[in-house]
Image 1 (spheres, rainbow, N blue to C red):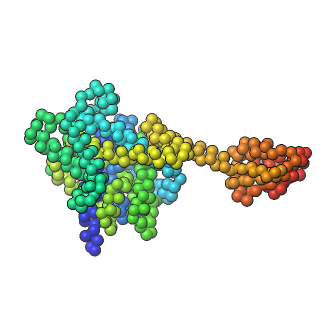
Image 2 (cartoon, rainbow, N blue to C red; image 1 turned 135 degrees about the vertical axis):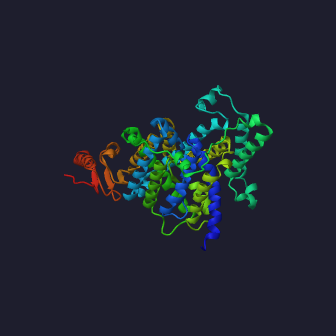
Image 3 (tube, helix red, strand yellow; image 1 turned 90 degrees about the horizontal axis):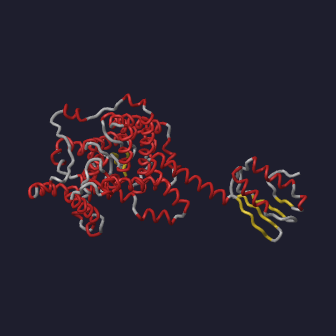
Length: 489
């Protein structure tokens, strides 16, 4: 009860941030807006109750939009996708029980940043046609060819919404306390609503060009139940369903654990939340989302950071946000139906830009090829081949670069007159043999060779064989050996 003064305002602000994002992410995924609200409710109530974190807010994530769209297209129906989501939830529960959360540290930062940047780019590509008022399946192809007519009202609403989102990040607005606590996305959506209502009264024909969301009204429990879609259980026999399930489980878990790591820096908890318990909670959430006809759930850093910055002290703030989303979806559908898709597209365009800012590319470039090349490989792989394949390409590229760097610096030969010092910087395997043989070949006759192998606790048998061959022939070449790491005749 002592924390109500902080938790109630925090929950209200998180709700105001989450509302347009839940609706926008559902719209971007080609799903009914109610699916987005339902996902926010499940994340805000069920996942929060099970999560070990006091501050992490879970719900639909913009980062999974491209996966949802591609998966539904591949599987042919939303109900088949829900089957994959149920399986993904079970996989996440299994990963949590197996304590797999600690393996998040094995994913290189270049691959993680590349994944987020690729998601941002795909989100921008997907939402540009919506911002220009292009409907149906024309998409980006119709936009690029100019074959599809644009909607001037949609363009104006989207442009004004983007301007509002930008203004809300400037010091001018942040200095005004009365405005600073109101989320920019909410203002952008409210502007779109005002444009829809005012335009409908002043210029009905023009306002009709603004496509709006369509949220059903629920006058009974049967109407609510009719809106919920069930999984197609027979789809489990389709191998593509399992591939989608694995992709959802891995990417959702990765995004959740990354959000938890980022949240630790904003508001440390003692003891820190268990990543394994968090993964299990997310698994239960996605299992429930699949059963009820919702969208994939992850912990999301944007809503979590808002929760922390507004002074939340306990889970109550997140629970309040979940209850408000539920109330809004059940009893305020008429109000939400005034929101134009162009405003939601602007919110998602801005979200995509924040995931793939030019500054991120500059930072990765300055870190050198070892970071920049895997970063680009991950982006290109995800855009061309899909999320799971792209992450795999990024991981392989990073491993190749790391092996090359490790191989290059593992051995070093230094000359001091007729003395040569061969230093082993690390443990050596058969992969270091070409480098080792090349350095040994540089040593001339009548030299003294000293081996510094204090940093190497292990030498592969193949490495020992190369060293032994060199030692066996050393006397014939007048080479004296010192501190030789293997027995010499």
